[in-house]
Image 1 (tube, one colour):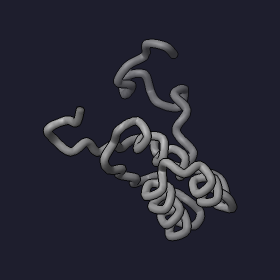
Image 2: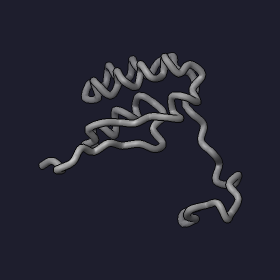
Image 3: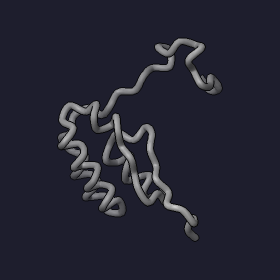
Image 4: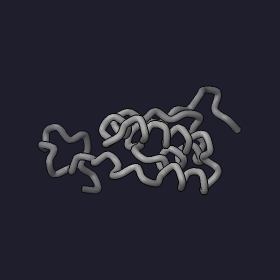
Length: 92
């Protein structure tokens, strides 16, 4: 079945493959912020993510969209976040 509301996903999505994966898992839309704006070539990465999202069920298109984009957005190491600013510490 489907949810009675539109499901958008966001957070931690930085590559075309990330976007395609959440679409395969049932998302109806993807919001990518830092994953694009912190990229070396934001326009190129945005176009690649749009292509991979549109054709999420075609691994050849997703693979082709993922080529030549350079390094994905780098996250923040949890050790660099002061203890009082961490939302949760389980699993670390």
